[in-house]
Length: 276
Image (cartoon, rainbow, N blue to C red; front, side, top):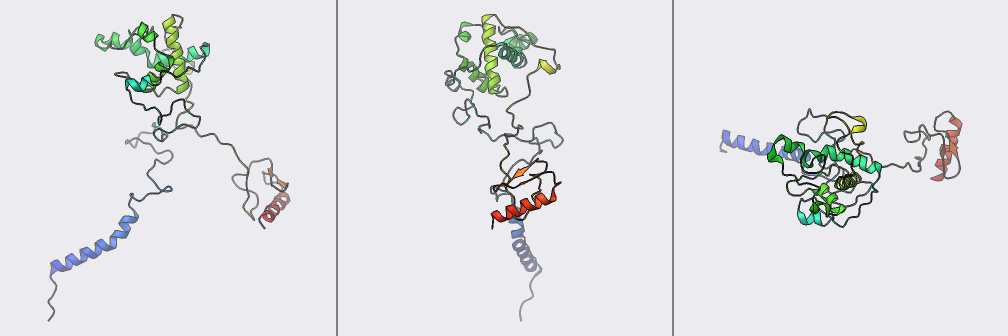
């Protein structure tokens, strides 16, 4: 006589069957399996912040060490962003491409007063508002010493890019604007600079720098190319609507506004013939 299965054996067998049945569903939803079409990423308008209520954060950033669409003077893949003396020294040979003119000095003054003056002072002598708040904060060196004057423009630019020692990097200042800051520092050293900020704290408009030109949110340049119709289509779609005129390789044309039905039909027939 076959023994009657115990309650524990029935439970164990049921559990094993449940696990086997659920495995395909578990792996189908597993985030480990990724490819170029489905990979870990931030969706458009999705905040990278852990705070779901943070709607002010940028939706996404460029990949780390990527080169922006407009190019870069020093790529992160060539020179790291490490705040190390030798790394900054390696940029000493960079040549300043920005002319010292009124525009450059005015722009450099804006960035300097916002990012640099609180430590290095409006005069560049190291007596900034941080030191006035607490003398113990007076560790920022003067930019008027012979040592600072002897630094190359490329070195100063590299300091803004990487930082060094207790000075943080100011990579948030774009490359072209960093050269303006360098030019302004040179004017401070020469005693020819206009001193002080453009406006009071919280004041906007012309008192603050322009909008970012190379921020990650800036769309890549787009040049519309030739429109290729699907065989048998009417010649109207989201890509062609609003166009004054659309040309085909065989010389046929059609209006994009959709008012000439016969013309569109003829153009569609012409497009169809190209693929036959």
